[in-house]
Image 1 (spheres, rainbow, N blue to C red):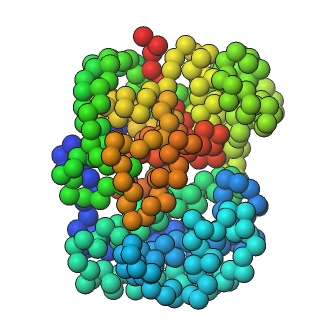
Image 2: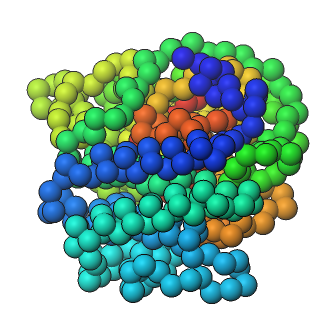
Image 3: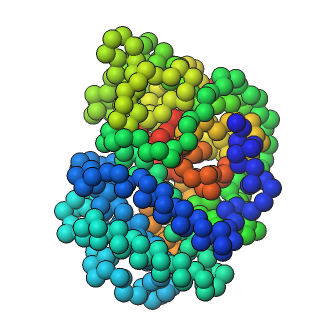
Length: 394
């Protein structure tokens, strides 16, 4: 399936435009999805091991409720203090900008039962407020919706990281095409048009001219079969294939292959949530760092696309969506004239340290997806559902 079909809304209508009744339905659906991702796990699984790439589920569920309450029910503008929370210590517990990651296992959080009751109470109050909200305020209800969508994906990759059973709601990944396509060079508007009447994230603001030279890009992402050939050819031992940062990552982690792969009887297997199975040669490669993607490219004499190249190729319908996020060659940086939105911690703290990631995974809700959506991660992350596509060198 080409992105031309998957992302057609962008070229035929507004970005993330939701009417009030659609927004009400979407908020309920997002909450149902959140609950589906966590309700089957026991209390010990809600605590999760203390590792850097995930949050304790008990904390994260409460944070989802706190964020919705803060922006939809309590926020009074940047110049005024927000109203009091429903839970006395909610700001001290759940404000991710002020609660250090490693401390989230040590907080005296409410019980699972009380956390879910808080979640329900916040949603009920939010839906009631939405009935009477003025049009400018709808921005914050959409912000809360997309924030919960993103945490839904985080719950899914937490289940993968912790080897919990697979959630039932994930879309299957696409099977890859190995064809290249030639894309003509052009100057296009990168970013969201200023006349967009739908929700736009601050890092997508605003549209500005970007020039892309002609390029040859792969229609789909690198496959598990192609990546296994790199590993079998000694890719993790050949230091000349790795950047200095990649070599430092290898030395620090001792990695000799992809994170969730093993070869017990001479055949590669991958762990998908709690089950091991043979790799699928034509399935998209997933759970690789940007360092690994770059090393594969040097081995194959290819390269990663820049963020502008990726966006233009997607807008033109030249590339296919495979169900994995995709590393780009570009650092995550602000667009010209960037100004943070009221949720100032969304983008600005991560400029310069993170890498731009494009596309979307099988765990990303469809309503978030279009070619201008920017995601961003540290280059050593591989717990997320991330792979990569490549371009010819010339």
